[in-house]
Image 1 (spheres, helix red, strand yellow):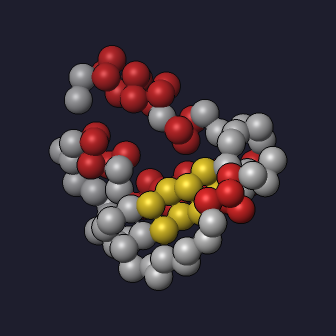
Image 2: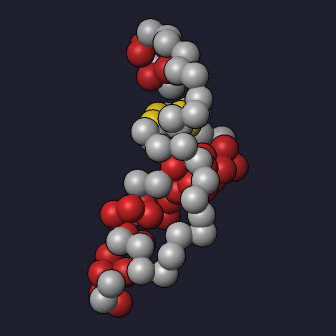
Length: 89
């Protein structure tokens, strides 16, 4: 990836935008955790949509005190009314 593209991706990445005022966040990945570290030539689209990115984002959201849910293919989905998650503000 060209250097300018890396900077744009970093500037627009959710992980760089986390603050204590971030909205509640729901992350769902259809792939299981694992398969990292990713090879150097992995397309950026694969890395930012990888469940391990979700783990890093969750850790940052947790540290900021932001409500969040992370689900991956290996997890059992717990069904709850949408309003219960989103109306917690």
